[in-house]
Image 1 (cartoon, rainbow, N blue to C red):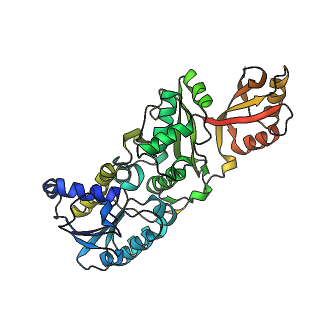
Image 2 (image 1 turned 30 degrees about the vertical axis):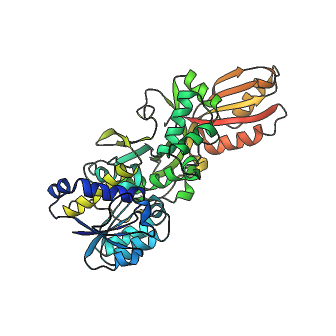
Image 3 (image 1 turned 90 degrees about the vertical axis):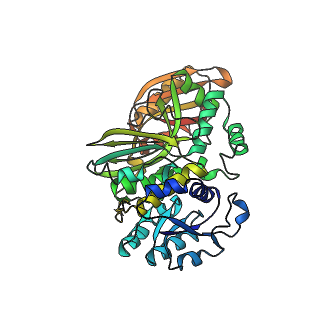
Length: 417
């Protein structure tokens, strides 16, 4: 079984490293001997591995057109030319293994249909949570269960930042700078900290667990850049943790898709996942609750999942992924959450009553109201019961117009129910 690798960056180099270090082990695990024949890149100087044993090309079309290569591994990232490389490989009757969550989130339905038409496999274990095996179990051992919900911490950069903010009471900009120095965050971290990376991965989890194609643009999305040390400190005082959580679940027959910071109790399975680790939590009617935790990023851990897919092809045990159907998505304004809303206000005796009346007007139940600080530092902190996102948004619009309000300091969702 001859393989062509497109992309020798961080993950591609990891694929080569595992091949060179664990070759005999890989041979023992596969029915069909796997040979990495060709590597493709525009610049091989980034790759620390010895490439002398491989055919080297600079045009990905040379990999796709090679009749000896039956499996193409796409690891160049971005939307193009990655989408074209995947599509043309499938059209040529070649299996494809990829870690490209953006392409699959945006074009997965068409690409999976193309794979089915050409009777080949499109595998993407490495696209979701690094070394954590999630996709294959969902498509094999968990198939007897109807999956009802999937929750995950699926971005190591944001989890590292939030873990450091909790541990050292630091602010977001300083921890982001530290993450960039350590190589955990890109020079442009927006895809991570604004939640897009997590959202793309959530789309793949939904496609796998529910066999539906969910448009990223219709999900509820919020990042972590607005979180302050004050929000973190309040959570610590209540034995809570703030995490960026991606979640997909069935609500009244419609699929609910959301990525945003969530306040969790310290005992929740996702609350203990720290630093660059990832976790995926699944709820099914047959399997109950399952949680996977592990390294969700990095060249070699992600490459390990790439090789898991390659070996599945060599052993003819690759999971089957039907083309997903369009999902009936729950509109954002109909989603229900409990909230913690912190307001900076003028220091007047009747301000808490004025604010509480507005909460009641918009059907947002106040379960706890705390007045903190004084003078210029006066705050109101409201803990609500479950309320519609649309009602919350209209409440915030009205609050912003009140003469006693200085600032809506933060709005955070509480719990996953």
